[in-house]
Image (cartoon, rainbow, N blue to C red):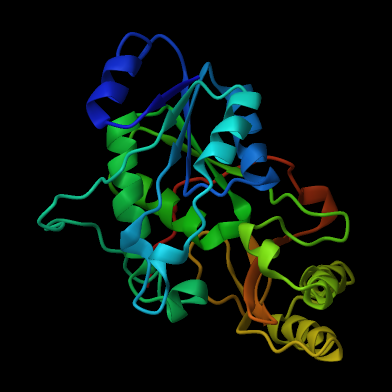
Length: 296
């Protein structure tokens, strides 16, 4: 496994295989856990060369989010990557000009809801750095986790809108046995808070179950989910049903939709989402297609 720190060296290393072997890319900010390893394993199955980036992107941190406090666990991360058969870790020290970035990307409309509503500018930082990384790595495919579905949908739209030659593939959320989505934030949960965390997924599942019983009105489904959360003493930051591609609010479930939740358990903010569909329509692996609907 090669650990590469500069754009120039990475391009030299990949040049002999580009076009001859399939390159998969998994962008991360480090602090890897089993969820990330699931993305790497999927990349390993689908490609000949696997590149993982470990770069903590300052541009996606807001004024009240502590960039300096983000956990940096590179030695542990690199050991996990080597064990999983990663070919290259791209670990740049800085991707931005010393005098500050003057040209960047901006997300419209897709970032005004869900996590974007409380983190203004966050997704601008995400698409800017992902665009940089795509330009540097030039992968054939890139793997992103479905737990961060808003991010996945935005990056898919970026690739479509800007005619990028990379295929975006979503990997299903990996969970603990009690349904809690794997996340680096789970480490901050106290024992008591960790015991409450499964209630988020349980609320989402109750909505899915009611849909399968024939209820298609989003208001009724959300009402049930909020009642389940209230029983656990949880007030969500949001609990919403939205179109899976456009992220527009869905009043009825008559197109591919997902139900999204964010809530604080103790001092830890957790997010999750699941597709709303009948069991016979589910797929274990989803490729996020470029958006074909017109955004209003």
